[in-house]
Amino acid sequence: MVASTTAGFRQLSQLGEFGLIRRFSRMTPKAVGAPLGIGDDTAAVVPSGKNHLMLLTCDPVIEGVHFDSSAAPFQIGWKAMARNLSDIAAMGGKPLYALVAASLPRKITTAQALEIYRGIMAATRKFGVAVVGGDTARSPHGIHVTVTVVGEVARSEIVARSGARVGDGLCVTGTLGASIRGKHLRFQPRMTEARFLARRFRPSAMIDVSDGLASDLRRLSEQSRVGFEVWAGALPISSDLRAQKLSKAREIHHALCDGEDYELLFTIAPGRLSRLQTIWKKRFRLRLTQIGVVRPRVFGIRLIESAGSRKILPFPSAGHDHFG
Ligand code: ADP
Ligand code: MG
Image 1 (cartoon, rainbow, N blue to C red):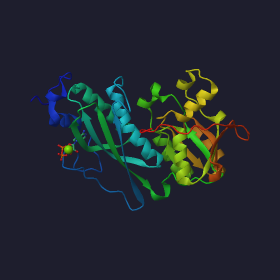
Image 2: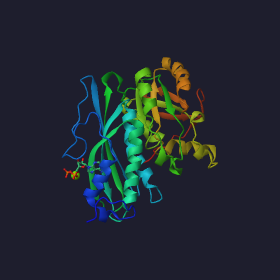
Image 3: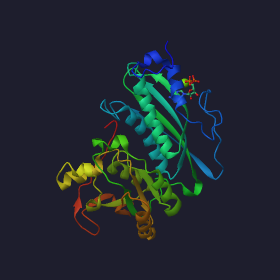
């Protein structure tokens, strides 16, 4: 079997599992807290101190579910890593290590496999996480890449989904909707912004918007046992969604229901809101928008035109559901 010569158009079946792992691990710099590097039976890492909690998460990207055949291999890798980093961000944490389980069809080329890995590595470099191991297997149908990320957060800085309090402001970063037009493959996990929020402003609850604001807000509502008043007119609409020139009602529906925005949705004590807005503007170019307030649970989730308005608009029942 041909091992590590360069011809990129060669099929994976010729490079073989060991050849591919060798190529992957050559692309992976050795991590400071992982003295053995890649190649042993497991990764071995130095644990975080007692004042920290470890954060562990895994999310796959699956061909036909999270991307289609038009996605560039680099973007598949980027997305596989970035959506896990987005989960670490949503806890207020910092990513440390990652494992990459790649199941690849025999028929893809070595160049395509390495491009997926390059996408993974681009995200790890940008967000300071180290790939310390993984698994490589053949997939009978399509590309699957499951990344596991281990991170940490100071006990005093962790932001759960369960802490929203009545009266808190409800805020979202960036813009919403139509990520299927491209953003879902190249989004930036809001790591710096989330760390800043957790350290300086202690949001009461936070979640990353992965399944669409409507369903992620429902999760916050259930886990915090609160209701929400959402201001339709305040929703930050993405330029890709605006470009579709839909009616205002359809536009709002998409902003609430389209999945994979990977923005941060959080609640924060009302007394901290204006200072947050001021400091945020100096620090980030990314938008930060208050889109509503936390209400008692019996209020439910209601969409109204704007703050103070009496007109209640229909709130969509759900965003994305894999089995829906
Ligand atoms: P095992 O049979 O013990 O699981 P493997 O042969 O699967 O060992 O893997 C050998 C080494 O290569 C392990 O350290 C593993 O973590 C690493 N590895 C395998 N696949 C990948 C990958 N896709 N990315 C990074 N490291 C990998
Ligand atoms: Mg293995």
